[in-house]
Length: 40
Image (cartoon, rainbow, N blue to C red; front, side, top):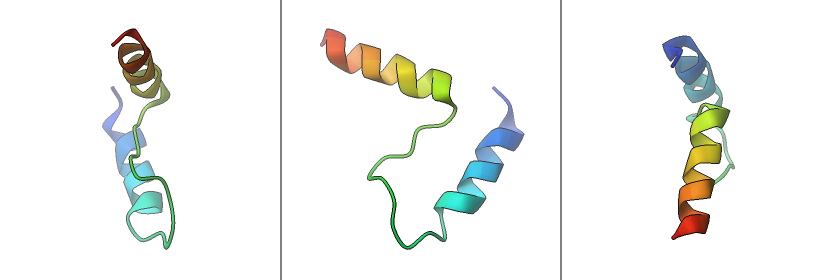
């Protein structure tokens, strides 16, 4: 995983006034998490 992508997203997410309850980055991890939750 590219740490630069994570850092760039944190710079956007942390100071935001609104957003998701959970922020999963990168997209591959989000997809893997969704598949795991669906399987459960």
